[in-house]
Image: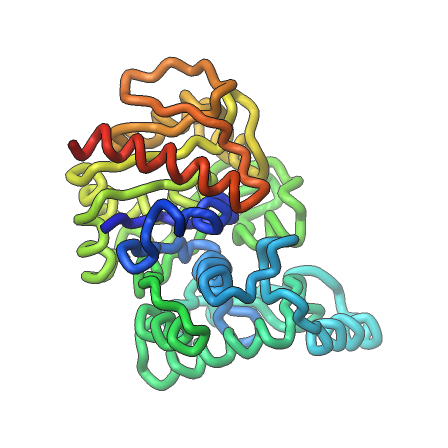
Length: 331
C-alpha cells in the first residue's frame, strides 16, 4: 500500500500514468482542502475533485480542472447578470460575520455567486451541489467524497485531508485574500507578505487519513506551500509523516519551477525557491526524485529521471523512479 499526497496539478499528473507502476487498489490519495471555497452557497473542493475526475475518467486534461466537454451556461449567465446589473466583477466575499456562521467546513472562505469569478461548468456544479447537500444532511466531507467517488465509478480511496475547516489565506499589501482570489481572480500578481492556514491549529486529520499515513507516502511535484502546506500545518499529520517512509518529487529543476506559484510563495515564506528549498521544507522526507538535469546535492537518497509530466508515458517514467526511491527507503 502507498499513499499519495495531492494538491494542485502536480500529483494528479503523476497519478495519470502511475497505474502501471502502483496498483490503484493498493493506493490511497489524501487531497489538500485548504483551497476549498464556498461559492454561492455550494462547497467547491478543487484538489479533491481533480483526483475524483481523473480516476472517474472525466477530467479535462487540457486545463487539469473541471469536467471534459462540460458546458458553462449557468456560469455565463451569472457573469451576464452581474454586468447587466452594474455589479462589480471579481470576488465578492460575504460579510465577516457570515464567514463563521453556517457550515463549519466553509469558514473564512465564503463568496457570493454574483459575477462568479471561478469558471465552473454545469456538470461540475452538480458535483458541488450534491456534495453540499450531503453535508447539509449531516455527512462529513470524507463521507460525501466517498459517495461522489461511488457515483463516478472511482475505486481508489480519495480522502480529504481533514473534515475540519482550514483556509489558505494570502496576506498581501492590499489585505488578506483567499488563495482562490489571489491565484484565480488576481492571477497570482499581488505581492505576498505571508501565507496563513487559518483553522489549522484546531483541525486534525481524520482517522482514515492517519491510517493511510501508516503506509509509505509519496509527495508529488506539488507546490510545497499551498498544496502540501495545509496538510503539514496539522500537527498530527506532520507527526505521522515523521514516522513513515516518505518520497518526494521536486517541482523544481534546481531553481526553475515547472509551473504555478511555488517559487513566489516559497520566497514569501522565507524558503529558498528551489529543489534545495523543497528538501528543507520536507525534513521528514527519506528520499527524493529529481530531474536528471538537477544537480542539487542532497544528504538523502536521490533517484534522477526526466521529471516532465506532459504525457502518461512521462508519468509512468516518473512513477517508476518513485518506486525505485521507495525501494531504497523501505528495504
